[in-house]
Structure formats: C-alpha cells, structure tokens
Image 1 (cartoon, one colour):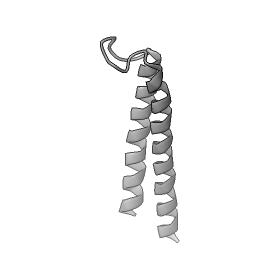
Image 2 (cartoon, rainbow, N blue to C red; image 1 turned 120 degrees about the vertical axis):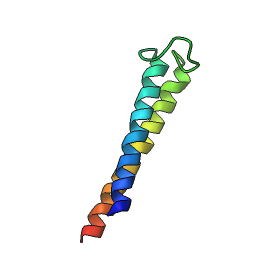
Image 3 (cartoon, one colour; image 1 turned 60 degrees about the vertical axis):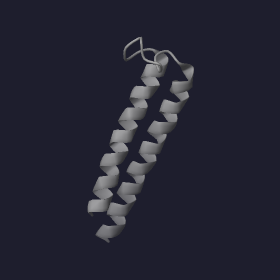
Image 4 (cartoon, rainbow, N blue to C red; image 1 turned 180 degrees about the horizontal axis):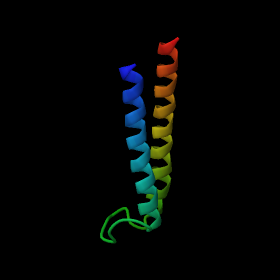
Length: 69
C-alpha cells in the first residue's frame, strides 16, 4: 500500500513539473532570463514529462488496487 501511494505522489509531482515546463516553453510563466522561456522545444518536453507523470500515477493506482484485492 505504501508503494502505490508513493508512486501516486511522485507522479503528481512530475506532472506538475511537466506542466510548468510546458508553460515556460510557451512564455507564459517564469522569468524571461530562463533558457526555457519562450523556447518551443520545452513545450514538447513539458508535455512528455507531464505524460510520464500521468503514467506513474496510473501505475500507482493499479498497484493500490491490486494490493487491496
């Protein structure tokens, strides 16, 4: 049960970072001096990172569900 909860928390944190990176790539958030600010490459990377976080969240939910059976 601890493993599933840990995966969910880690997935949430990674998804938040991916979302922040995505918005920095669009130039909507962060300091203008950042190398990620208004950089289209970070739009794509942010989406990939957020997607990985969602995958980890789903894995954590599956682990919690299977251990509760």
